[in-house]
Image (cartoon, rainbow, N blue to C red; front, side):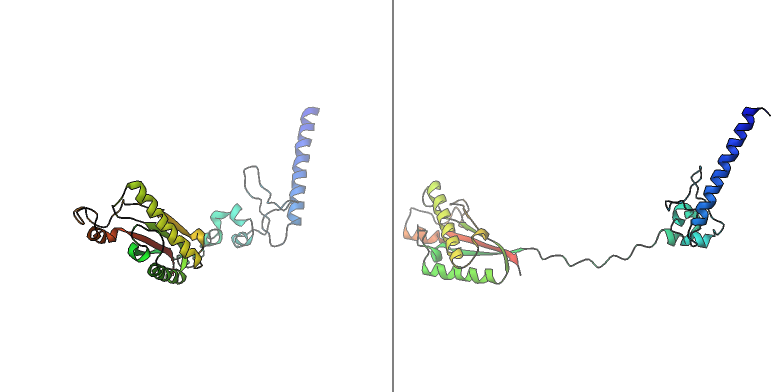
Length: 225
């Protein structure tokens, strides 16, 4: 045998002996409850084919107890060990109460004199009822929308409806309602309650009285009980 061949065989033999020694050292140092060869880092020693090296103490039962068992021999271990049943979901929490609205329409003749935006005593009494209802719920918001009848121009009635809604907000805030929770809006004469064929004729006390339902403030309370 020539020198080159002899040196090659000796190198292979030395590498084999070295790996065996390392493997034996790793196996010896492995905890007694481990059935796979563990290296100095605590990792399972893998073969070139990607298989775990087993110790002489390996058994299917031991593999099921070994932390690396499911990684190395999942097919040999009972399914419930590697795929434990998902714990039953906890009962779903009751859904939070959704804010609901309580809409109150306060007639303008109770709140204001005709063509005015100054609250009347009777109007304040009506708004006191609104404040009481707001205190009985967990208030989210109050929306006050002012309306007018058809008498007068669009621009005038728009301003009048806004002033009426603002007067309502001012009073509610004076009674302890948070100003940030009160929103106001004016609709002018855009949303009448009366029909086009009602209250016909020129402006007169009779027509003004007939148009009373249109002169209103819609107050909506939104919150949870």
